[in-house]
Structure formats: C-alpha cells, structure tokens
Image 1 (tube, rainbow, N blue to C red):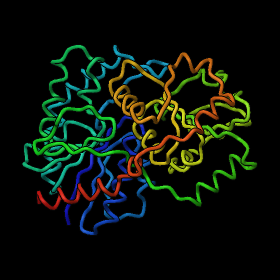
Image 2 (tube, rainbow, N blue to C red; image 1 turned 30 degrees about the vertical axis):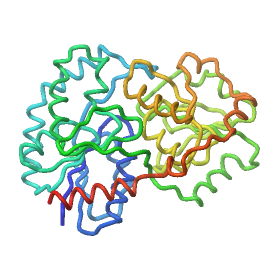
Image 3 (cartoon, rainbow, N blue to C red; image 1 turned 90 degrees about the vertical axis):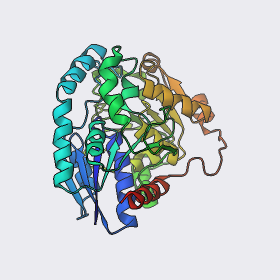
Length: 365
C-alpha cells in the first residue's frame, strides 16, 4: 500500500473541490493507494465529499493564508496581506520541520500539493518525490501584491524543490519541478444527469427562465449584494451560494449541506463569477458561458482571464460595472450563439491527470 500525503490550499473551496475530483478518480483506479489529506478551512466539505472511503485519513493542518480581501469587496487588501504573510514567514522553518517529522513518521511515499509550498521543502529533505498541481503558485500570485521580492524567496525556493509540476489551464508559471512540468487543461467533479434534471425542474419548472449561477466564492462576504440591480433582470432566475444573503423570489440559494455544487453549474445558462479556477473549470467542463468579474491587481486572475478570452470562453466585467448591470434579452441571446472548439478542448481531464499521477508514483517508488 502506497501512502500519499495530499496538501490542499486553505484559500476557499476551489482547491478542495478540484482535489476531490482527482482523489475520487485515483482511488477508483487502484486499490493499493491510501491518501492523507492535509487541510483545515474546508475539511468538513472534504470529509462529506469523500465519506465512506476507508483509504482516506483527514488531518487538520493550516496550509497557507491565500489572499486577504478588503471588506465588502473582491479586491485584495495589500496592507493586511503583507501583515499576515510576514506572520506566516515567522512560522516557516517550524512548519517545514513539523512536516519533515510527519512524513518520516507516517511512512509517506509521495507528496502532492495544490499548492501549499512548505511540504515540498520537507519532502526534499527526506528524498520523497513530490508533485505540485495548480494553475498558479503563491510565489507568482503574490508578485505585484508584495513588492519586496526578498519576502517571496522562501516560496520560490520551496517550489523549486518540487519533483514534478502539473500546470493547469491558464497557467503562466515558469518550468517548476526538478523533473519538469507537464501541461493539462480543465478538470472537475463528475456530473450526474439525473441530479441536474432534478435541480432544473426545481429552479426552472416552466423552462422559460434564463438561469444564472452567481458565484463569488465562499470566502467573500459582501453586504451590498442585495442592492444590485441584476436581481431585477427580466425572465431570469438566479442560483447563489449559501453565503449570499439575497432574499428574492427568483433567487435560489444552494443548501448549506449540499456539497456537489457542480450540478447547479450544469443547470445554469450563464455563470457569473470571479475567475477562481475551480468554478471556471466546472463551467468549462459543462460548456457553460462565463461572465467573469475582472480583478486587475491579481496575477492569477489575469492569467485565467487571458486563457478564457483567447479561447472565446468568457466575457468580462469590473466590480463597478456589475453595480449597474441588468441581463436583457439581447445579452442572453448573444450568449446562446455557439462557439466552436476542438472536440477535446473542454473534456474533463480528471482521468488523464490521475493516470499521470499514478505513473509518477509507480516510477518513483
């Protein structure tokens, strides 16, 4: 039995959701692999998503700080981010030592991280092969937000110790990994067509509504959402995450205990979201049009948006423009105009990536 220590970023649910897609696929493919999930923020979501699988161990561990956003905004709070990041760096050496001891004590054969940095240092110390998988690294994400490049050196040095790096759609990362970088497209959790039909009948029973999935991420708490004019768009029904407090007859909130949100995305005619890779990927795999809220200051976002625009997969809008936006018939009809893509372009690559992971695991062990 091979043991994988799987580290998942603590920023939001996107990293957790895409990790679920890969872990489900890995455990389905082979019987001689067990996974220790190291994470804290969305640990309950991970437990519920992967319940009933006795080859998974859940370990509570704070993996990274992610972004820090301004109050009632989707924009970063740079001053607070620097304060939090400097606190994080003070723990850096002890985090690495802690993980080195953990990996050694628990007989870890392989380390995967999406995309916390310090586990790569610990794995490197012990000669354990490691794999980073992401559309970005925190080193690149913080460039432009944290001006002092010396502060980012620990992250850079850690990512340079990855054995492999699987670069995901939209990534503009350098060639990390001592054994090189491989490129992959979108992947997401599988969709059950029966569940999609059930939700569709619930939110759009007459079939004459334009259904909009409005998702800003579970770490965003914006009080003024209720006042946006978009909710008054004619012939529109909205699906929102459970943290969006908008009370309207045409707004359906995903239940707090419902964990397979990809089914709601598959129901929608339009996805409105910040450019988080998780929701973008689920929309892409479901061939849904995207209206992306553009954040100019965030490199990760700009790389994802560039990729989407190059492939005619999204329109963009600023946060300020959203405050005056209403979906009219012309806009809805324009979205329905089909774009043609290569037949393999939007295929869910969870299966392909999982096979590559297993190949690396077998080769290195």
